[in-house]
Image 1 (cartoon, one colour):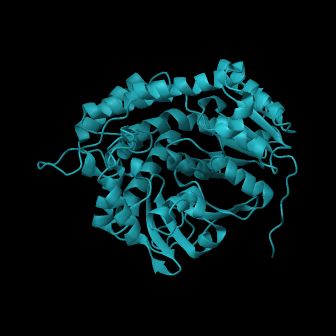
Image 2 (cartoon, rainbow, N blue to C red; image 1 turned 180 degrees about the horizontal axis):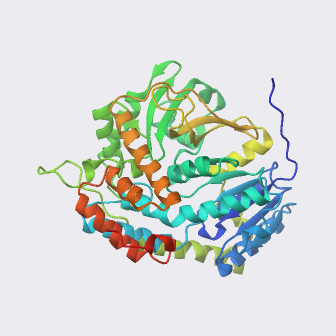
Image 3 (cartoon, rainbow, N blue to C red; image 1 turned 180 degrees about the vertical axis):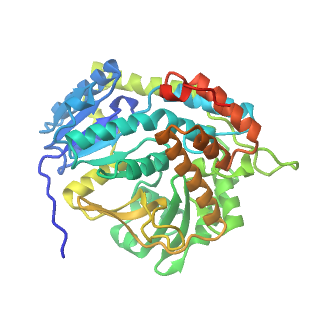
Length: 468
């Protein structure tokens, strides 16, 4: 039986956490730019009223400057705008710089090095402790006020939150996203690395059709498992390109903790496992090799620690840019040339417009990776429309990589269960399953210290009895 075609003429997109700036500015751009979206409604929600007002004002200015028919709404109360929503994007992260900084600092104190600190290790677990209870509150409101809406989680740890929404809010239509594999940009990068094209401008639909690329794995721990152009394996060429660029990647480039030595690490992991990691800025945090625990000196230094002060500065600069658009210091006409779409808004446009483009989405495996469980929550190339998400076939996850994937999945699943159930036993079990944790005593102390330091953000029931 053919699937029913679902058509939306005036889509309503609600952004919960518009003031985080990670997604809000791009959402404004795409909702104004896209012919499939710009006759609908963009509702911006944030609990910080000052930031919300700035984003709403900015959005209205962009709409007016571009003579769009888009309606803009804003509220500090999500319940006021959720009614009739077609899409709800979760993108909030309250005081994320402060708390990621605490997670990374306490972890470093006990020998665990995190360059990002928001998806694996103590940082990933405790970010879920802070964010997931709020996500589930949002889910309950969505079930009540707009039960047919698509819920798109954009909050790390993406896999933990995606698992939780799937298991504990099963009535909702939901999936999770990461911006790391934004199509077609990711594919174009590998086309350049493989020598198929010399620069982005040469990439065409014809080349795209001939270039078979398959990436799969747990979010932030994904691997390039297939790269063929006209039937020819170009994975070795991609790896050799990484090896060459590794020789100069630290010269004049980004020296942030997430950026350091990524090409060198990518090639080293390819040399070991035969496949290329595709999100190395995070993947290097998922394996124990870069923790500085070896007796001998490694060719690649241990991970640098996530830079709290630099992140505060970056956020200040982003808000300064918003202020400049509002004041006219930067002409509002430049907004559409300053930004572009992001992964979530491209997918929303694709779903509303029935454009038939594939995207990388975090969802249930459902047989795509043949030697992993159907309920494994993986990042996979998917067909996606208003009827749902359908992962495309991948084949087997290579041995070695698969074992590490299963360990990470167990950590994420235990984390989701611990938060939802309020289980201290499962919190401890999640921490001690995590691939970065190497001491029971240290893990117990990390939990005690982070629970105390993050008391303002973690539900009260975690403090009704002592941890040990």
